[in-house]
Image 1: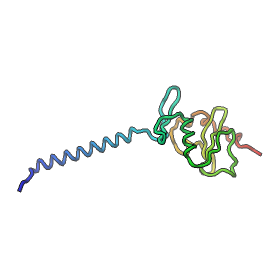
Image 2: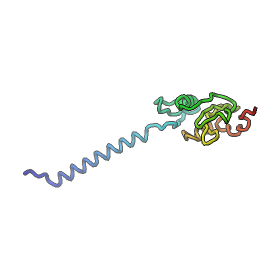
Image 3: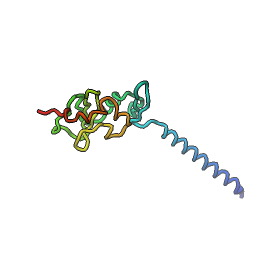
Image 4: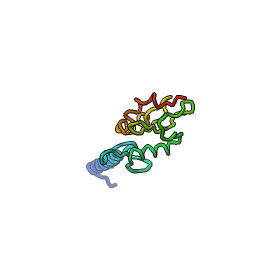
Length: 145
């Protein structure tokens, strides 16, 4: 009967382990370098955001529009005022326009929050357009009838 020397078996086993480790490291490296949904990067004088479904970098406005279109909940459009509280459901969306610009808001846990505060895409959204000041305008943005 033919017997492999223990040395050869040991070297083959080590080679297989090293090959598997290299394959695992390569797979992890690819995962680590692929953009995360909502991740931002510098672009010109602003930033662009990775949209997984579009599989591309898009402007923050386009990212919000894509999110609102795909969300499946009610989108109240763009307004200076929040929708009537009695008609609002969880995860409804509205783009609130302030003097500083627009900010996508989502109704979550009984109140309107910046969509970025709900989903934590990227911190840059917190200071983008009207998002930095949208909470200061809260009282003036509820329409009183």
